[in-house]
Length: 324
Image 1 (cartoon, rainbow, N blue to C red):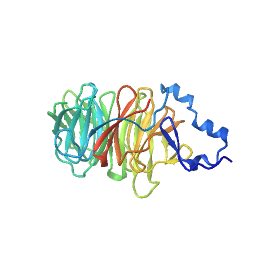
Image 2 (tube, rainbow, N blue to C red):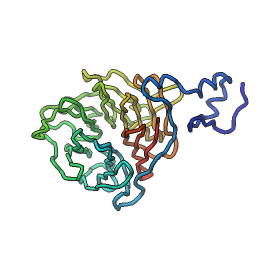
Image 3 (cartoon, helix red, strand yellow):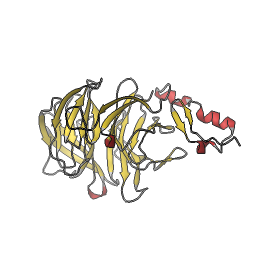
Image 4 (cartoon, rainbow, N blue to C red):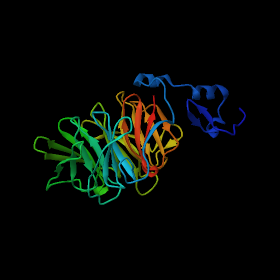
């Protein structure tokens, strides 16, 4: 057995706990630290760990500052739109970090509840824990409030845009469900809804290239109630669950934000573990790509050039990391 190390081992910027290594033989340690070539199949040539590139925001109420950022999205122009529950403002940052716009989204019955996403035409969709989905231009003009007398999402949270004029909204009512909502965008009217039941506190929602819906379930009434990712197939049934345990030694505690890059790699923020986890397309490999410097990471959005942005809620900022 190798000599026990008192200090963590750092590899490619990653920190591996010496406790994990102490039971391994030398050749096993070498294999553990070697980059896994299977990541290359998903377009990842090298994984960077804890590689912080930029910080946006900081505590404050003036333009450019943030109080409690909980969700964000990337616009077609490459800007970042951030929903700040602390000020009830949407803040638009350019790719280089400059503040371009700030506007109010109004009422929010439960602080921190809700999400923001962007359509291909640049229209921002905002949920805030109510029966209303707001539509804004990137300049802050309220275009419309999407609602219906037959609405079935009274506690809306995460939102994602699907093809065929549909959106997916997670909902905390009745234990938790995901609503598929058909919309006529020319008239901004709801055509029909379909609810997928059987969730526990569904939070983040994203859509992958196969039009499957990725849903995070946070912590509800116990450590292992939820605490996972559920993948809904095109037939709108749950085909796979990842977690609570993933990999050999990791367990989700309170997964929140979720997104996917152009190669099909999936990213999940864990508010309980204060980290960001990356999975390859078939979830056979995982890596904790950000394990330090975060407090309550929630919303995630992939940017260009191997970057990912995270709403670092309790540090009052948005952090941008390089992962490849």
